[in-house]
Every structure is written in C-alpha cells, then in structure tokens.
Picture 1 (cartoon, rainbow, N blue to C red):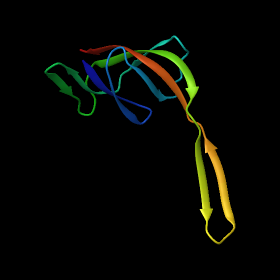
Picture 2 (cartoon, rainbow, N blue to C red; picture 1 turned 120 degrees about the vertical axis):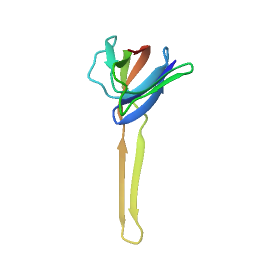
Picture 3 (cartoon, rainbow, N blue to C red; picture 1 turned 90 degrees about the vertical axis):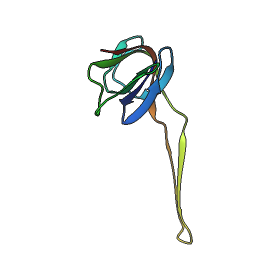
Picture 4 (tube, one colour; picture 1 turned 90 degrees about the horizontal axis):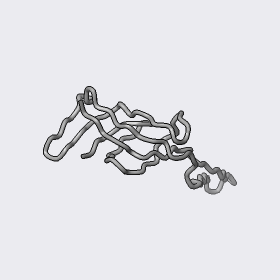
Length: 104
C-alpha cells in the first residue's frame, strides 16, 4: 500500500514504515501528526486518484526529529566587473516516520 501526499509545496510517495524528510512542520518530536492532503491512494490493484484530493483519506506520521540539511553554496560573479558574492543556505527539515495510511 502506498499514497502520494502533498506537504510543504512538494509531493512525496510514501508507504507505512518509511522515514521521510519534509519541510519544517510545527510539531514536537514524538508527536503524531495527520497529513490530510492525499492525492493518490493505492492498495494492490485498487488505485484511487483524487480530484485534486482523495476525500476522507489520511496519512498518520510520527515526528522523529528536526534538523538542517547540508549547506548549499551560492556563488555569483560578473566577469570583468570585480563583482563576486558568496552566500550559503541551510534548509530546516522535519524527519517523520509514516505509521498508517487510511482511505475511507
């Protein structure tokens, strides 16, 4: 069984027991959350596609931890103009474990 969920402006294909790093969520570590923006639910041969969301479908997940991704280096330069700009960015994330998928 798997589902396609939408969170943080991105779409993820998830199945029970899977660990996933998503955009930062407002929840404490160890807390259970419900992800209700479910686009597709598939259980063997039965595939339910939402328009745009599957009505009554829900994915429950447990927040494992919060963290930051590796640094992304940004470098801008204009040739022959003596212009160089260095910048870095570390995106925050929430690591979740998918517990169950329910499609009522």
